[in-house]
Length: 571
Ligand code: S6P
Image 1 (cartoon, helix red, strand yellow):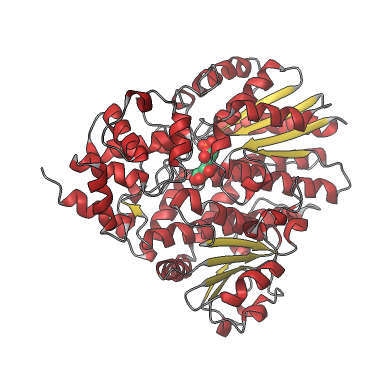
Image 2 (image 1 turned 45 degrees about the vertical axis):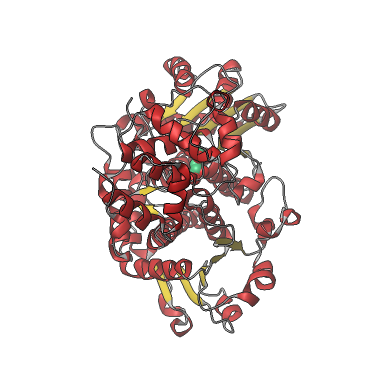
């Protein structure tokens, strides 16, 4: 079976685990360039077909905005749902600022708490996706639905696409992702009668009649295998913004050039990575903190704070980080977020997200091993003052303003010079909003580099694979099987057995255990530690699960454990 591109290994990063911070950032950059330059023979971002699909979706969006009962729903799981939230929030603000009705809605599997903490399980539930879509669109007669699933895989989105097709007179469904259609997931969805691939095939019939769209340029494999928060998340943001900037302009009779708009993001990528040396300094600081058991806090203003929260929320599922390792705080808290469920702070300490809460909950206990990164809207943000009495490390990411920031108080400044960006003329009334989109993406690239780099330095990654992943949903279960297969060269069935042995901590799998459903394995595995490394070591050495666990416990760092074991295995 062909591996989906979003799950494939990127040859650029196979040695990223042993690279210096500077080389880590350079490799990330090289991979990010593939978003624009394309990958192998596949249709990329600038392909005429991609541009034409963007244009057509934008035309539908214009039509929806003109209808009194029209609504645009953006939906996804994990990072895809968080980007959906961000875009809906930003474009509602644009509409509000020009006195128009807000008509963007977002849906995220696991609802609003999934904006800050990973909720991987609801991703597998198509029925839940349908219920949430119905809820968001009751009473509406025209809906543009954009289902985002980078891997063309999430059952939550599959259910919603089916619901749209069953009510095609109301909904125009769009599938947004980054695999060619034939590589959509073809694994049985539990409690459902279709695979994702079958849903795609049905959707293709609607596409042929211009009743649906599939927007799926290929952007190449992720830097860390399967980590679609990185390139795919970036490409999602770029594509949605391109669609809706063009749509808003059309409603104001301003011409737009889709290709030029896409090109401006390509230029931005170079402008951001021009700062490779300061970004790698920040990666080093972040790695030092994590290695010393310290934490990283992002404090941000405006939507840059949201970017910080999104990046932080992805670290537990991606790197098995604890919820306190990396946290995001934002000026004005939930007021700024404008999320559907409002203030979630009563749900517990990890939902306390304002700067005031940072000051009361976190600041007093910060030590030298902790790092605080300020995501500055402009130089007037006076947090350096808040931090002045703390011994923690301090850094900031800012735009066009390095000279105005008091350098002596900070250990690292990453300043992105947006003036050097030659963009499509954006001189309309929304200029500030559009400029903010570039700042958000710059922040995303830098923070993704910080957390990816820091976890690499902490030894969480082996080659370019995060081996110690949490087996917390169907996609991750099969990714884990693939990882064991990759290093052991055993058959898929045998690898799955090793995984189950590790989950149930036994060497003898009973027939009863073998006949359970994947969802049952996930329930058991989600709260467990080192499930995949244990299965991997047992599979490589063909040893007992208990022995594999003991061997792993002798090592502190997953990367060295796996590389030692692989290097010393009997031939
Ligand atoms: C990936 C991230 C995940 C995904 C989620 C949805 O780095 O940790 O939360 O965003 O699994 O994936 P997809 O392929 O449906 O967009």
